[in-house]
Structure formats: C-alpha cells, structure tokens
Image (cartoon, rainbow, N blue to C red):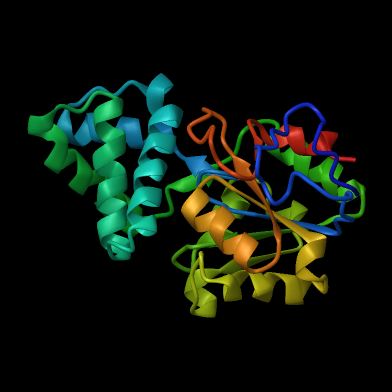
Length: 248
C-alpha cells in the first residue's frame, strides 16, 4: 500500500514533512481509539443526565461537542498541564455546555458523567462505516491495531463497538505504563506488528498527542479532522476514516 498524497480526502499542507518525496510502502495502520475509531455513547449519556438531573441535552450536537472537548484536552496536553482526572473534567466541562447544559447546571452534570465514566466505559460506539473500512484495509494485507491512552478497558470498548475482531491487537497505555505522545508507546506497537516505524501510519484526532507522538517515533502521522478544526496542521489530514481507502 502506497500513500498517494494527492488523492481525494488527503490534505497535504505546505511545509509538511509528509508532503514531499517518493511514496512510502505502508504495512500497518495504527489508530487512536476514543475520538477516532470509537466515540462516546451519546444516547446513554443524554438519557442518564435527563433521568438523574432533569436536563435535556441536544444529542444531534454531541459529536461536534465531543471534538471540541478533545481539542481542549489537546491544548492542555500541549501546555504540559493537567493530570488524567483534570483532563477528563476539562473535557466534559467543554463538551456539556455545547449540548445544552447551562452554567448553573454544569458542575452537577460534569460530576454525573464522571461517575458514569468511572463505573463503565463510555467510549463504546463506532460509526456505521468504521467496520467496513477496517475490513477493507485488512483485506489489503495491512496490519491494524489501536494505540490508546486508556484505563485498561480499551479491549472491552472495542468489543462493545463491534470492531475488536478487525484489529490485530491493541496497546493500552494503562497496561504498558507509557502514554502518548511518548514515542515509546508507538514503538511498542511497531514491535508487536513486526514493522519498521516508517512502514506504519498512525491515525488520530489530537495533533499534540497523536501527530507529535507518532511522528517523533518515526511513523507517518495522519490527523483525523472531521470538523476541520486543524486546517493549519503540518501533516496529512482526513475528514473521514473512509478516506483511508483512497490511499493506494
């Protein structure tokens, strides 16, 4: 599989280190999990908040709000600020106002979702086309895996989303003791896949975590940017996971 940067869906940015030179032979594609392959169970979250706090959320705005929340997390990570718990709180504090929670209700709503997240994995749904996309990539002989900053429950989430069987393995930061953007976690993946770093691409939605980390490990970074929040990013970008199928 070779990267053709001029195909539809890929947006090479002027000055990108991936925008010049000969096409590279790709043997593996690794993915971020939350925000890329899998997403929050918005129906369940909205239903629970409505039942417990009598707050009606706008579920149609949830996916965009999720990406805004992740963008906030990326800002904090880039600044080197915040523990995992702080990042989670900031994430939901950014997301919930976007779907209808007012300032007076925000603290209670955030606490409600954090309690849910502690009790069960909320990142557990996949888009309808995700399984088909992964199956087609796998049929081309590519090794597919997840590299995720998670809490030891990523395999459960992938099974719940119905895509675990399409992945060769997963690397959960909780289990390996190192988190993105540390390049070591990406090298764990390349070692398990038995490929050289330059033979692997990494797809993720957070520039400061996914692009910076995978690039520093020698992988080819691809930014998943469905709402075009990172138009100036100096890397390849896709708006949909389906765009990976135009790579040839």
